[in-house]
Image 1: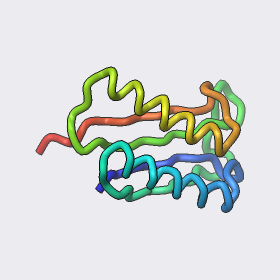
Image 2: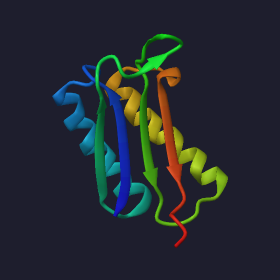
Image 3: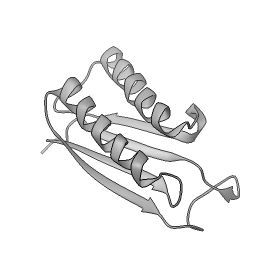
Image 4: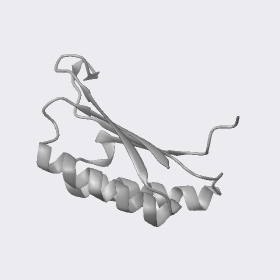
Length: 106
C-alpha cells in the first residue's frame, strides 16, 4: 500500500477534479511502485491557509515509497507526480509541493 496525502485549500479543487486526481494518483502508484494507493485527502478550511499574507493557492501531494529510492529515480518520479497534479489542476510549480519519501524505518 502506498500511503499518500493530498492537502488542498477549500474551494480550490472541484469534486470532479478530485476524482480525476484520485484515479491518476492510484495509477501513478501502480506504475511507480506496483502497489495500490491509500489516499488521505485533507481540505484546509477557508481562512486557515496563507502564503505571504494572502489566502494560499498551494497544494501538497505526498507519497511514501515501498523502498528507498536513488536520487535520480526520485527526481523522475517527482517530475511525473507534479506533472499529473499540474495537468489536472492547472496550478504552477510555485503552487505545488510534491514529496516522495522513503519508507518509515521501524
